Image (cartoon, rainbow, N blue to C red):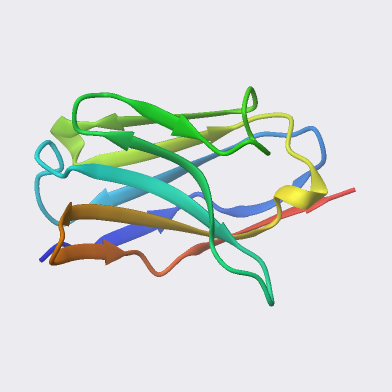
Length: 116
């Protein structure tokens, strides 16, 4: 099993930037897919970005061109650099790890609030 701990959320003005981090309790270089999801009240979690073990990256349509996902295997850490933030980017951001069909994990979430 793997535990994920997010950090870096907070309050920022529209147009600003945040860098989220997700630190895993074990090596991430063999985790099939790691990603970031966003959830707002009353809505399902939506994909922000994910990165596969081979480096393939997918971004959600609403954030393309404004966010960058990356990982640092030596630190067991996944990052999400978010720029030109908009109020609609507000929500709880969750880190995820998909290891196998029977093993996946979610972090506890970190709140991002973008003021207009």
